Length: 277
Image (cartoon, rainbow, N blue to C red; front, top):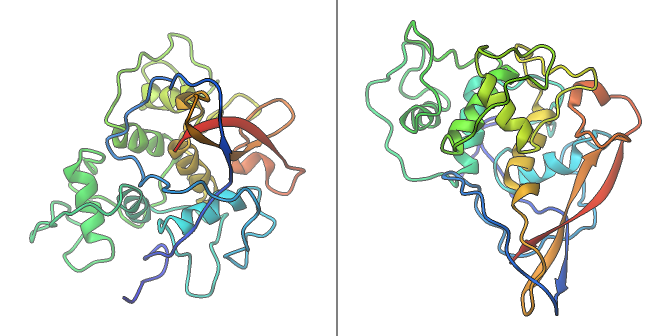
């Protein structure tokens, strides 16, 4: 089956972990139910680094997350073998990423587009309409979707919150970010993202909601969404579990955002979460 470029279609992968036979313990932690969770890993992936898939990600701090994105057939990168990690991700590509992360569910796109600027036969026509059908996007008040427009960080938070099924969540009265005020668009969604450890914002305590999100940062967010630190069962007798997830951290425990660490020293450490098979 032929595949369009990236953002156009996809390939296949795996991510970090060691299989451990546990003789003691487990009381699974309460699970967070994601209506559109990515397909489950059927086998504990290897914790050893995988071969670099893209020609421009070998030194990227989110190379593990980018390779996971490719291994899960969520991205294929571009025909020239690049991923273009620093390039902003457009709204149509975001629709495609979420559709693939949901496992490419059966969906018949309407013959007549609900958006003035998305025509039948256009790249990601089906994925965009799936996104709309699931209530993840409504488009703009002028009837457009603006597929070629980079998605900003605030909208990305809203997309992921809706993708998760808009779970019950009470946003704090006092913002944890200097540039996100109570009552501001996507205030709740941004704080939900932070509460789930999918983002920490930047070291200056900003979130930068209007800033376009780069492709490598999006890979990191999607990886964290599907590897929830807050949803890890504890070791249990007779249960095979695996230690997963080389998490991105800097010295003060932040999950660095792509913009603040690109070109700087970057550390990875084993966090020690357990996931049930």
